[in-house]
Image 1 (tube, rainbow, N blue to C red):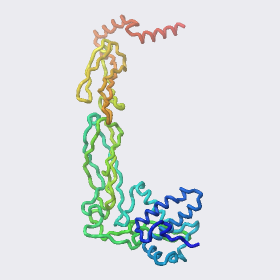
Image 2: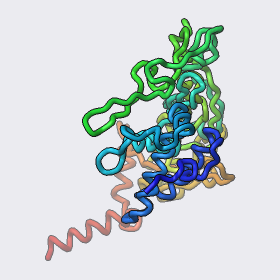
Image 3: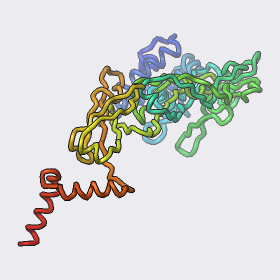
Image 4: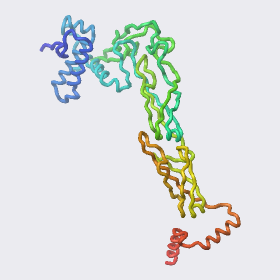
Length: 377
């Protein structure tokens, strides 16, 4: 049975350019891929034919021979290997996987023969520590980021100004070389041009041909109101410069908030522990606490306040990120037991103890009454 014309297999005209061939191949390869058609022998056969056709027509030398002699140009030596998949399968699948998945594998796609390989720069991480006041108010912070930046001398190309590029003689511009090993053909990246297909006539002397140099950059970072500890801020295209003019990576800033001397934070709410005297707790009173908005708030202590009791100050907490809401401030009252009493103070406390009843100390009085009944039982 005679083979179908390769152009007919791909659905292209004989004079179709490289882009049209590639587009047709990608569409058909995705349609008839064995993974999408499990157990379908017809689809598998078409997939093999598509790969064989594209492998021949994408290569200018093979295409010229095919246009002149047809399938006869590859008889006696162009057969497939075991399992029906020859070297064209490896090459063609390499192309389609690079096209489909290249952007998800670090941005390392080649630039299609336009000189040196352009690769996306790496993403960078910067740890930024701020005060709680900066989180409350929002601010703009200047940071100094050491990274690889585009070389000014060669403008990121990697080539010495005034020089050009030439086709790699090892791979003839394909960026890959093949070697036969028994029944198999192994395809690997060209070791001379590192897969670029092109060689620079003279590399830039300032960056060594990489197109980027080590440099410290100053950046301004906007800290929004209410930002929380552990928040990540992404600055697009502020990461490491790409290799030989490739796109830059991103900069990720991880924000941490320093411990505050008075307040502890839980989401939008703030907590503060304030010691008060025993007499204030018993008789009641008030005092002032500073707040993050640079004002002072009055805290009223109820008569008979117990240890650990909290007073809520509404709207004196942290602003909620990207919202008009504000949290609350909770003041925990820690009652301090008197120390270093004078003789007179001790006399007064002893007199108070003699006058103390179950009504003035209901919790402790009730507890010891229960213990007494247990011992009497």
